[in-house]
Amino acid sequence: MKKLALIIGTLALPLVSFAQLQNITNNIITPLGTIVNALIPILFAVALLAFFWGLVKYIFGKGEDKEQAKKTMIWGVVALFVMASVWGLVRFIQTAVGVTDNSDITVPGVKKP
Image (cartoon, rainbow, N blue to C red; front, side):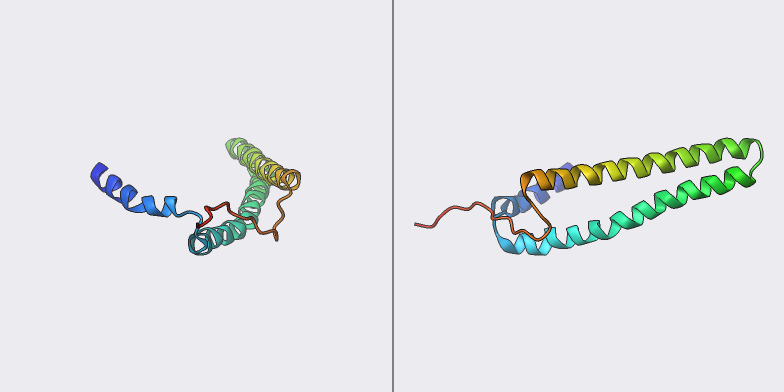
């Protein structure tokens, strides 16, 4: 298994050394960003549903179910808080650095002689 990881790492080394190529950025990073951007609202919705599910279980539950419902509501609120905080920090850093969603980032490269 270690040999396989070493072989894959060695074969992937040119991808790292040629990181300034636009094909890698367009073929790997852009689709990955699209997937992550699609998952963010879904994760917010799941956390909100977890909170409301805990609320419904608390209202209609009895005894031991109420304790589990409280935990579900607390974890739903914690998940919402963490996701909103990270989202806010990312937006703040984007604004502070001057990077917007539509701005092109120029990758430094080596000039050919």
